[in-house]
Image (cartoon, rainbow, N blue to C red; front, side):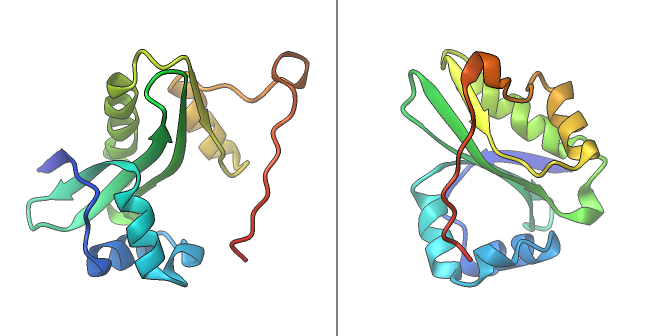
Length: 138
């Protein structure tokens, strides 16, 4: 059974195990930094009966006008059990009054289809302008 909890103070061991399981190496270069980032974010976590952190979604928001979803990850052996969609739906319910919700994702067709199924749509340059990023993680 999976339990969902609003918790942002995960141990470095929990963080490392989860991020390693999905191959997100950039976050593991400085696990203490990732831990601090989680603590400064809103985090909804999926926890297995044995206490393993099996998924999480994290975002930052002003609580009124903007929510930026930074991470959504689920351990591979737990994927396909609707954990990711449950995390997003519960996260969106918490921020239901926020006007604009943004996320940046890989362009894999399966990933894009997943987010589209949850109501997200690609940025239309004619409507929203363009999305820009300055990434200094690497």
